[in-house]
Amino acid sequence: MSHTAAPVAGDDKASGGTLTRRSRAALLLLALIALGWLAYTWAGSGSNPGGQPDDVDSQAGANTADSGHIVVNQTSVVHGLAPGQPAEQLEGTFNNPNPAPVYVRWVTAAVTETDRPGCSADDFVIAGSPAPVEAQITPGLHQGSWSGLTIRLRDRPANQDACKNTHVTIEYTAH
Image 1 (cartoon, rainbow, N blue to C red):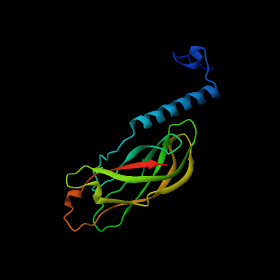
Image 2: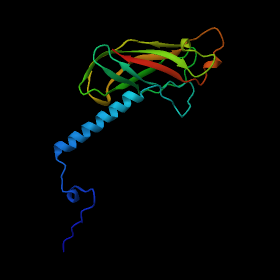
Image 3: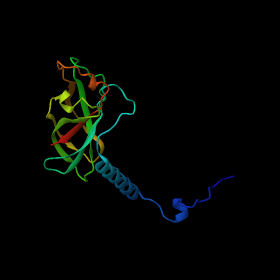
Image 4: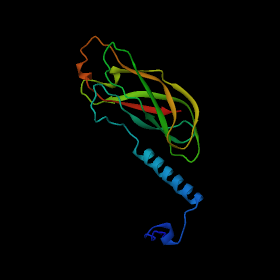
């Protein structure tokens, strides 16, 4: 005794058409382009709902110097920054919504703001900028990688309690 499944509305067999391998690849490519476009239009500073002390969490869009738009992602999580303590590593990936690879020579970074009154972007130092990348970034999300930047809290003679538990916005630029 053999069993056959009845076609269901929306099923390829019921609609009379079949998706070829080429059609599926085209649909996948369209989905990747749509995701890239969303990343391009919604890029901005991130947030950390976990509320770790002195978190640094950022994702920023950047225009490359000569090849179009690319998004620089920060994948490292930084917490526990304190005056006189060692710097924390910054690293990440790229989102390339372009239809072709984009060459990235280096990444620069700057602290642009904090979320606490009395604690400013000037209280933080980013070292290693520009960080060399020297790579073709293929189209898609979380492609390639960058590293070599660090962030630390300056050790000032004045009280820096205003910088406890702050979230810092970092603007990254791909060149």
